Length: 251
Ligand SMILES: Nc1ncnc2c1ncn2[C@@H]1O[C@H](COP(=O)(O)OP(=O)(O)OP(=O)(O)O)[C@@H](O)[C@H]1O
Image 1 (cartoon, helix red, strand yellow):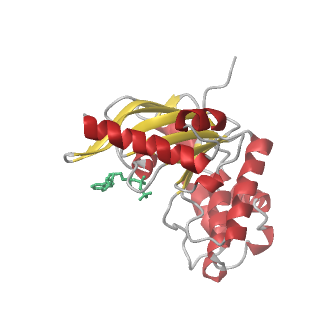
Image 2 (tube, protein in one colour; image 1 turned 135 degrees about the vertical axis):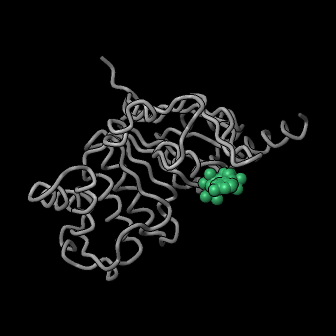
Image 3 (cartoon, helix red, strand yellow; image 1 turned 60 degrees about the horizontal axis):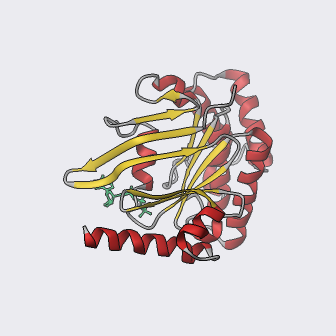
């Protein structure tokens, strides 16, 4: 039997009052792959993440994590989901290990098992030796890695990252991307990585393009280049966005 996609979004819409933040969006993030969710400011990336994580309720379409519908089987879906939000969410006064143990407790894992999983997750992001330090002593990039370790701790099938490299220097950005791709290769986790930076995309990645709440493209990098009429990913992306805006003006 083939494995369910890590994430399936089917015909989902969401509005804030009269403003449509997502308009009939369908997309997939396969297991064992890096999917870049590419969109400019206001594209709807964070809204989509809020629906997948159930911060917002989706009352149209369907969202499935590893085959589990987030509305009908929320605990199964959320148990298979790891998230790194755009805003930092670690408790600065607690140690790195305590932050991870707290997260483990939310997933029903306690005691020695939690400690062991936390140390293992920290080792996977190269931070085993920081376990007993308080979070305020870490740099922005180190905190991000701890957040990734925390998101991986309960063994999710899908990892959502909302613009995780914002505020990081070039070296930290590159390292974080390489580490995420290594985790995909080692664990088979499916990653949905929201970004507006085209240089974070590699040739073998999947790409989903959102613009003003609408899906403009979903496929691989060669497909994006073909649709945008350019060998340059950035130029192809901008061509798609421009064509979408022209369609809206004509409508
Ligand atoms: N809580 C809210 N109330 C009203 N409108 C909102 C709210 N959150 C988002 N929006 C609107 O929904 C649209 C999509 O916003 P969203 O934050 O999902 O985009 P984004 O792609 O994450 O953007 P960015 O790259 O700037 O973070 C925007 O027009 C935004 O103004």
